[in-house]
Length: 356
Image (cartoon, rainbow, N blue to C red; front, side, top):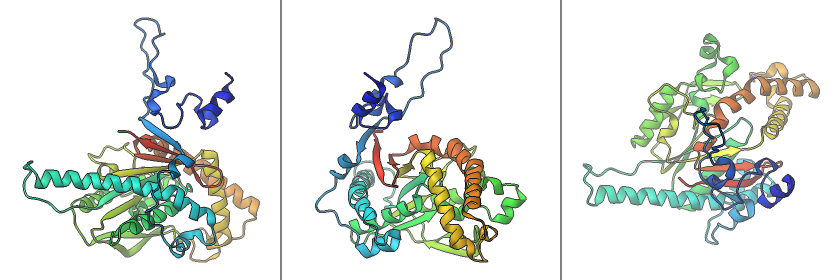
């Protein structure tokens, strides 16, 4: 059968000709089976084993929602960036509501396990109160993590009356610009070594320990810096969404990494060529708006022509953001519980659910 026909039969992207059909475990792919055709005694590099995922297309996933699901009000969605955007309304109904059902099922299972352990016949000491359920959201610059995390917060809050859901981004744990300059790391901003990892891990540990009144540094995208002496307070929410570029990364010599504290994790995925286009489009929009302010770190770009601004944005993407994506962010995709893959119009088209 011709390759394109195989791809159509798969119902997935052209680059997944060896993948199984949706709804089948990803590890059933023939491409993942070891080959024994090498000569005897010759060292063979084992194939990279992909995590076992079940893949849904958008319509299959949307069918998982319940008629009883609570939808956030149109006003609340508009406040999150969806003014007069019917596509975002549909995204909430077809993607976020089934996702919330899935997350809620995991939360109930975690609570039931705690109940069995601490009130049943397993003696592990004194009973403890439930601690925040932590959800990590990872993905590239410009893939839409911030909007996604805000919408997820709104839908999770609506799903259960009285539930408190808070959102923290890793931006506040970046080293201040002055320190990045001293360390010669400004060209690596967003890379793992540009974050105050000990402070980040201390915060996450305190969250999972059930502590309240936790201070998180505030980051200003306009100033492109951490705001001195300004903090947000996290007071033991029911759910904490922790969003950032490298929250699933493991390449670290530390004894712990951020993902050690996650109960659930989501990776936002897309073709790198699409993300580059979205990054350039966002840069051009900011160049016409925020960059015009004298308080903007990028104010010196305010008078560039569109072609000049496009060239600058493409250079930043290719020199900083793309290497970070390929070296540090994308390799962590397989650690996520759910991978949400976006298509041309920023809409989620494919949902991969990890089985282990």
